[in-house]
Image (cartoon, rainbow, N blue to C red):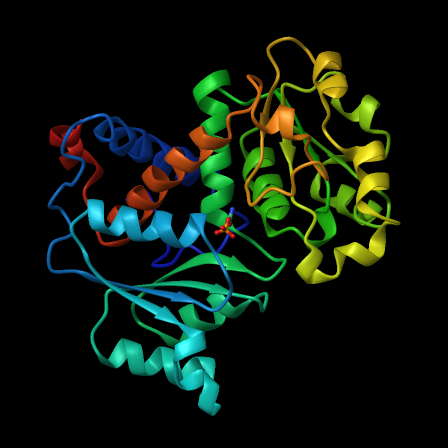
Amino acid sequence: MILKSKDVLGLEDMSAEEILGVLEIASKFRAVFDRPVRNVPIMRGRTVVNFFHEPSTRTRISFELAEKRLSADIVNFSSATSSFKKGETLRDTAENLAAMKIDMLVIRHSSPGSARYLANVLDCSVINAGDGAHEHPTQGLLDIMTMRQRLGDLRGRKVTIIGDIAHSRVARSNIWGLTKLGAEVTLCGPPTMVPAALARLGVEVEYDLRRAVAEADVLNVLRIQLERGAGKTFPGNREYHRMYGITEEIVRSLKPEAFILHPGPMNRDVEIAGEVADGPSQVILDQVANGVAVRMALIYLLSGGDPGALGGVH
Ligand code: CP
C-alpha cells in the first residue's frame, strides 16, 4: 500500500517513500495524456465531491479532469450557491454530503486545518486542495514531479523559493516535500514576507535575491497574495519587482540549465516579468499538465487502486 492514510492533508504527513510512490503512479497516468483517448475506466461507480470555498482555476479544473479521466462520478459544490449562505456550518454541510454516500471529498478552504477537521469527522477520504496559508499538497507534489522530470533524483539539488512565503501554502508543501527528498531549499523575499523562523524547517533564508539564485537548479516563484494582505508588506508592485521580481537580467545570471516554476495564478511584472513567464526557462504549463496526473494518482490510490494493476494504462 503506497498511502498509509485514508486522506491527503499535507506533505508534512507523508514520507519520502509515499511521495515517490505517488509520483511513480502519476508518471504512468501522465503517459496516457498523449493517447487520443485519455480516459480510463478504473473509478467507474465511485463518487467524488469537489468542495471549493475559495476561487480556483487550476486546482478545481485539474481535479475535475483527473476525476473524469478516471471515469468517476463528480459533484461540484460551490459555497456561493449553497446553504452556507443561510448559516450552515462546514461540518454540517460535509456530513450531509457524506450521508449521500460519497467516496471522496476534495476541499479548498481559507481556514488552515479545515481539511484535517473534516477528515477527522468523515469516513470518506479527504484531499486538501489548499487550506489557507497551511498546505497545498497536490501543488507540492506536481511541483516536485516537474523538478524530477528534468533533474531526476533531487538529493543535493538546490531549489530557491521566492516571494510571499509567509502567506504561502505552496511554499510550505514544497518545503516539506523537497526536504524529505534531500533537496537543499532556500527561501528568499522581503523580510516582511519571509519569517526567519522558517529556518527551523531545515531551509536557508536569504534576503538578497541575486545571492539566493546564483547556485540554484530550480526557482519556484510565488504569487504575491494580495487577498491575504500581502500588499501591506511592501511599498508597491514596482518596488517589489525591482527588488525581487524574476526579470530577464536575473535569468541571465542563473546557471544555464536552471529552470523556473510558478504555481499560478501569476501577477505578471510583479513577481515575474512577462518575458520570463513566456520564455524558454519556465516550465509552468508542464506543472499544470503534471497536476492532473498527480491528482489522478492520489484519487486512484485513496480508492484502493492497486499500483500493480496499472500496466494497461501506459
Ligand atoms: N495553483 C493554484 O492553486 O491555482 P488555483 O488557485 O487557480 O487553483
